Length: 378
Image 1 (spheres, rainbow, N blue to C red):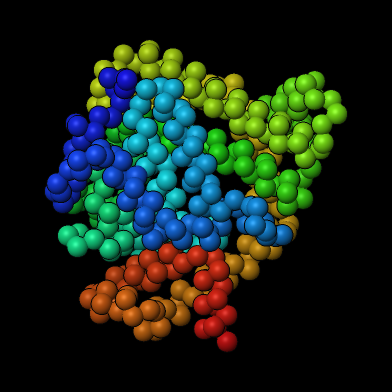
Image 2: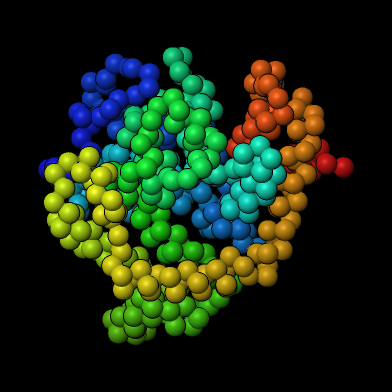
């Protein structure tokens, strides 16, 4: 049974383009399914999560990360009696706007787009699901519900100040009430993102050899998890010891979010999803103690993984790829695939053209960007 403050599909604000309802799926289930079938979702399979030097088949990609986020989000939503379908849809969609090469590609594209309004991957996700996916007969984009669009736009909380152009463009058409907090389902998806990457980046950093078990055993939460495993399984193989410890780290983060959020929701007195939006604060959180512990883990990962010397070498290499491709297509947009030419012909002015080029490059996978760079840059 859903909580009174959960998002009710029967009370959805609907879609920008009105459609007949499904006989056997709620509107939020249809949102989830459309995201899964989107071209941009499939391309996440070949987009970097964290760029590590010794790439291999076992590292997370944006796709596997999104699936892990959805798994955590479903668990938390179920425990809090929220709408699982909306939560899962948002979790699966939250990284659709990412460029090739992870945050490195985004940073490079943002600099190149500075004269034309910049680049923001959250805003780009809105652009993808409202415009760039062009498969349906009656509309561009996926025609998601208002609630799903709100949740994607507010992935990092209320959006204040100057809006990224891609978000401002859609918001002028369909007000997403960006100044308020999002639904509890959206907040769950955002915290599930934090849980997933804090856990799997430890896994992938170990696999890449950027640090070892003794290094992370000094971290809060992680050290306790290793102590528990050693007590229960004193003769376990090293690889199993590592896995058992990190799954306990994972579980500890999920347990903390559920317990902390349950108390916050009860204390809030919220009786509807609108109450959640207008509380003025989030209701899905880590406890202060675990949040402080996670900041230590993030500091460690930043120093030992995201800014490791081998990773920085790769960051520099792929930055050059984006820096070379952007002016190439801007100066000769005919080099872009034919399906982009109608948009190019309709573009009025340098800014409009630059944004089309940005859309094209942002949609590339890592390997396609590298292939195009090798083919076009002599």
